[in-house]
Image (tube, rainbow, N blue to C red; front, side, top):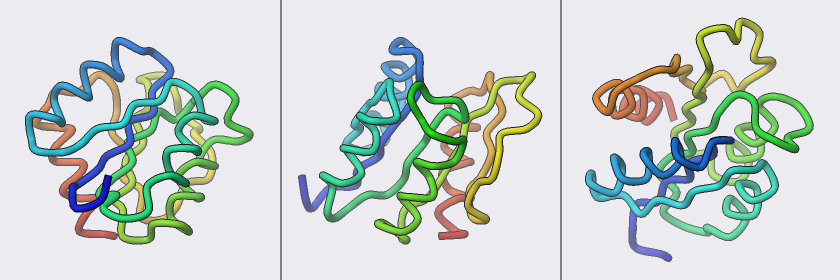
Amino acid sequence: MNGHRHIIVAHRHPLVAEALDVALSGQGYVVHSAVTYRKARALVALLKLGLAAVIAHADMPDEPHAGTLLRAVEVLHPEAALVVMSGPFQNDIGPLPEKAVVLPEPFDREALLDAIAVASVTS
């Protein structure tokens, strides 16, 4: 898995995760999808090098508290860009790492790539 630019996409809806996988794979990333916090956390631990970004929904199944995944990534992979997707009615998404960029849903591919670029600059 090393030598590539990896992105972890964590979204509770498998079809959304799959669509994000297709959009990002086309940009040269190796995408790893997870539909639960536990799976996403395992992927974070598995990837040792090359984690470019984590894009996570603000409300993941089995996540102890909003932002737990992104805070773990910030410790283990400080170089990784952090993007959190939030629904239109999610006003309070809890404590997030300071460098995390919020991407309101719905969004298009350009907005996704822009959020990754902005998050990459702050990393």
